[in-house]
Image (tube, rainbow, N blue to C red; front, side):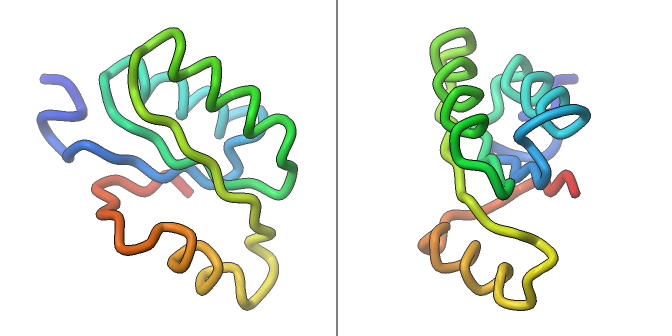
Length: 90
């Protein structure tokens, strides 16, 4: 069973700019899930989002936020604009 069928359409991946976060993002996109990428650095997020959209024909968006900041949760919720998140990778 594909993860999209089990969990839903959209996953949010924290720490997505490199390492395991980028690997999880790639895996989820390959499963057909749209991804919301969150990390502090904008450039790697832009590059990863564009690559995932091109390779897997999914929707990849990104949010730059520092999760160590107490206001990060509010910033992320505002940026999501009510978009439903079905799977969280943190």
